[in-house]
Image (cartoon, rainbow over all chains, first blue to last red; front, side, top):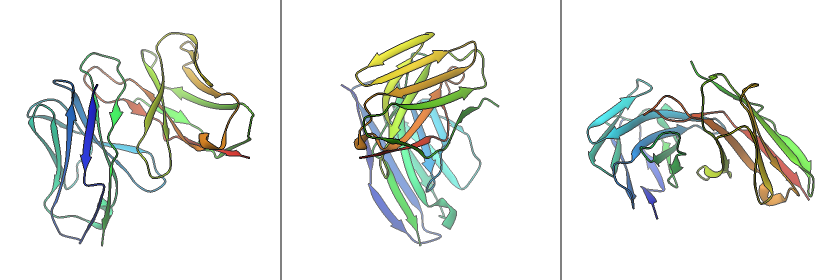
Length: 113
Length: 111
């Protein structure tokens, strides 16, 4: 069966520091991968999605970036964090076949001080 | 801009009652529809998928789809306090893109 791992579970970072969140999927090949952010009490905001290695689509221009160095690895990065980057970051995957659901990792709760 | 609309709630029902959660979507050609449950502080969990008009039942959950009205609903029978959560409706986007999520409806089941 497929599993998705996301770490760390919680992270406290000062303003202006860099960020790297990692997500890996097991048990499937060439999945579609997604990064979402959820602010407190708000809906899901799609940040990036990827349909293959090195293929990244950005949904919201901001100081975050994403990379997919391997088939089942998806990384979310920032060079300088802002206070507004605080939130719950979720990685998700879906099969490449159309009309399939997405499956979420456990998320990373990021607090910026 | 494709949209998925949900009433934010909170929807409050007593234990044992039927909870009815509703969702409308804007893209008439949408083909797949999903309900996710998200407990406070946790990630969304897929609970139902529906692709054809009509009802689909899974235990205490029933998903209903009406493509002509662009409407999908989730019924929870014999609601339990453990059903208290935010329920997200999601609809497929274009091929190769992410699902489109509603903002969610918060359900509170009182014992």
